[in-house]
Image (cartoon, rainbow, N blue to C red; front, side, top):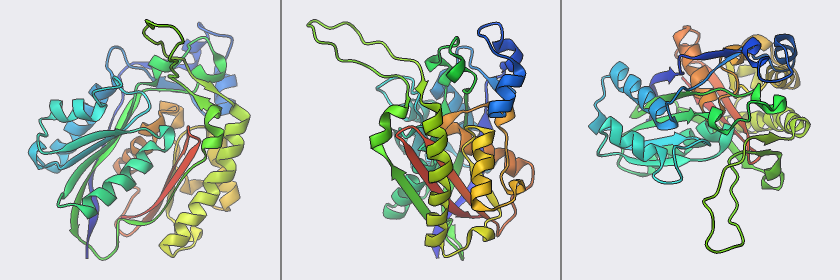
Amino acid sequence: MQDLKIVGTAAYVPPLTVSNDDLTTLMDTSDEWITSRTGIRQRHISQGENTSELAVKVGQKLLAQTGYSADQIDLIIVATMSPDAYTPSTAAIVQGKLGAANAVAFDLSAACSGFVFALETAKNILKASAGTTALVIGAEVLSKLVDWHDRSTAVLFGDGAGGVLLTTEERATPLVAGSDLRTMGQLNDKIVAGATTSGTSFPKQVTGLTSFTMAGRDVYKFATNEVPKSIHRAAQKAGIEVEQIDYFLLHQANARIIKQIAKRLAQPLAKFPLNIDEYGNTAAASEPILLNDVVNAGKLKPGMTVAMSGFGGGLSVGTLILNF
């Protein structure tokens, strides 16, 4: 049957690394305090590169490694909560810089669930249209939304981008065997960044953007309860048991959250790759960076089944069961 295949993965992070010890010069914290609570030891921080520039580098890597030319790309989706601008979309900038003149391009905003939502969206668009090839990229420069003196949020976030090149091919099993996407907007105030106000006077001043605020305990409760449920629902749609999943590629929000999800799923922690110690929380870039790390490590083999799950702002959660 005709379905989709991931023919390439790629990632890019800015060269500057900021360690936990570096943050002690900005706030009252310590390496031990951050590591024990989050699993994070460092994060990559942009020095002048905006979100589109990170995404372009991922796109260039994907084209180079797969041998596709830019004019063969039909669709570009950039998942991001830290776009270059309200308009144009970051994806439009990426399309222009790559020279992908035949590609429809747009952004998708679902915070840390963004890449999973974007991958499912790309799948449905390619299946419903005459297009055959897509770039799906998660890219974030979260450092421009961080208050670097707020210990409750600043220690968590990093910058980076990752993505995949999708194309159609004949295959025995579907790439996406099951999916579960959910938004719980009644909890919209639990993670907020980049909020704007309209003002009440005329003429109005140009609006500013707020830095991150997060209700940490509420988000922890949400993630540890809702992600296992989402994985079970997606696995049920795929017609498999959770035990049949080879790897769980989860959004790298917090090592303690991931360990608790593994416990609630009654699955060994070895099935849950972690790279949060190096990158921190990179929101929509998190899952594709992790996927690229796992692929480059040679852990994914043909025929394996993977659960990819993102969760965060919205609040939202999304899980895909992927056949490799």
